[in-house]
Length: 157
Image 1 (cartoon, rainbow, N blue to C red):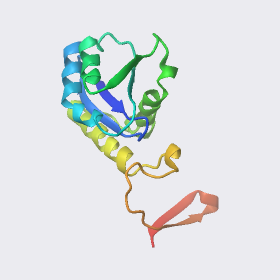
Image 2: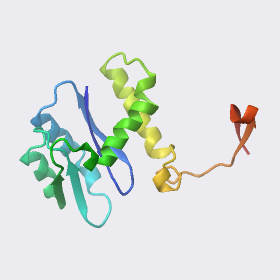
Image 3: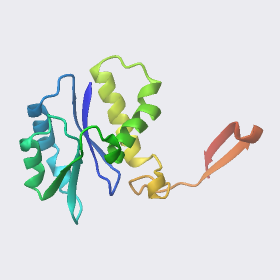
């Protein structure tokens, strides 16, 4: 399965545009348009960094240019120039997908949707001061450890 996602580098929020077994340029452009309301968030300079996959056509770029984005394709075979996207792919694999046997498209969609909710609302992010991306009311959590931290118990105060 191929998953089309976007990550806002400033806020670190991830948005899933769609998932398919057979992506093509029309599918990518249509699913990008359906999520275009998200791209209008925030003030300041808007920049889209993307790879040079042939599915990212002039029509795809035009969706972003119409709402004031500058497009910056990275050079071929240079994933290290798009570290936020590559990092997110590694994170969802390590923290979610590698822990499940996926039983079809609906199951994968559920896993990704739930993980993105967790990632955007609860998961701490080191670049954001180890706080969740959304300002949730932080409850005081008390941790008790046994055997040098091998066993831990967490309780709300």
